Image (cartoon, rainbow, N blue to C red; front, side, top):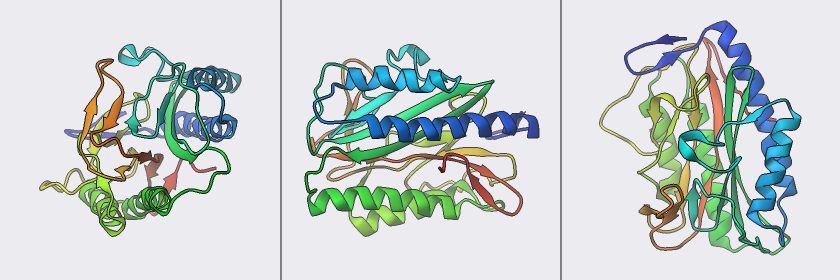
Amino acid sequence: MMRRRDFIVHTPEEIVRIRAAAHAAALAREEIASLAKPGMTTRQLDDLAGAVIRSMGGIPTFLNYAGFPRNICISVNDVVVHGIANDYVMKEGDIVSIDVGVTLNGGIGDTAKTVVLGDKRTSKDIESLMTGTQEALEAGILAAKAGRHIHDISEAVAKTARQYKLGVVRDLVGHGCGIQLHEPPEVPNFVTKSPGPQLVPGMVLCIEPMFNLGTHRVYVEPDQWTVRTQDGRPSAHFEHMILIEENQTEVLTRV
C-alpha cells in the first residue's frame, strides 16, 4: 500500500486479497437480500447475515467497527444508512437497504443494495428513486477512468440525481477501501469546487449514491449511527467497489 497525500494505491498482492473479499461481499449481499422477507425482524435478518458471511470464511467488517453493534447495516424506508438491526418487523412494500462489509484474509469488501420487499406494486415515486439511484451508480462507474478525477465521478452521479429530481445526501460520501474499511479519498455524490485526486491504477474506491425522495437533509438519531431523512420520506442506497486499472475499471462487487 502506497499512501499518497490524499489517496492510496494498493500493491498487486493487496489487490488479490481485496478482490477476493469484494467478491465474497457481493455474494453475501445477494444472498442476504434474497433472505429478506415481510414478517421477519431486522435482527433476524442481521443474524442470518452474520452466518452467511462466516460461511464464506469471512468476518463481518462492521461488527464492533467504532462501536457498531451489528453484523451489517439494515436501513428501512426513511433510514438512509447505518441502520441498526432491532425488533422492527419488516412488512410488504418496505424499502430495505442492505449494506455489507466482509473482511477476508486481510482484504475488505464493502457493498450495498436496496430492495423493495414482497410483491406489492411500488409507486412511480419509489420506482424513480430506485431506478435513479442505480443509474447514478452506473454513471459514476463509467466516469471512473485512469487520468480523470474524483470530480468526474461526483459530476456523473449528481447529474443523474438532477434528472430524476432526487435529493442527494451531502453529509455522507463514498470512500477509498481495501485494507481498511475507510481509506482516502472521499468520493462525494455532489459536485465540489475541488477536482479531487486524479485517478491512477491501483486505487480502490467505493461509489455509493445515497438519494432521497424528498429533501437532501438528514439527521442522526441519539444512537449516533442511524441516519434518517429529515422529512421522513424514503431513501435508497447502492454501492459498488471499483478498481482503477490502466486501460479499464473493474467492478469488484459485480456478480
